Length: 80
Image 1 (cartoon, rainbow, N blue to C red):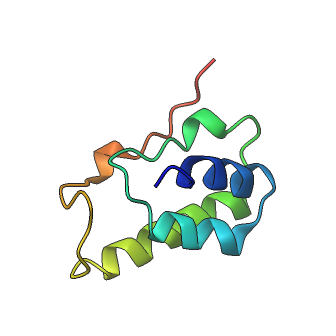
Image 2: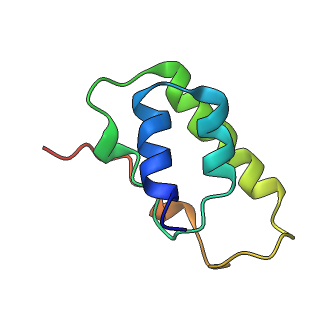
């Protein structure tokens, strides 16, 4: 699990949309800090994140580390 944050950041910064979608779909933590990484919003990158969230919802029967994840934990706020 330690590898998820740096892999997510690298995929997000490098606009690796396929990798980003896969990482988000398997995200094991309660918070997904998208806003903290958004210096310049990119539509394709945001679509990849949302695609990963869609996969996460569809796999609700899969056992999760934290089964209480909710979308209020998707942090889209840009931090200064």
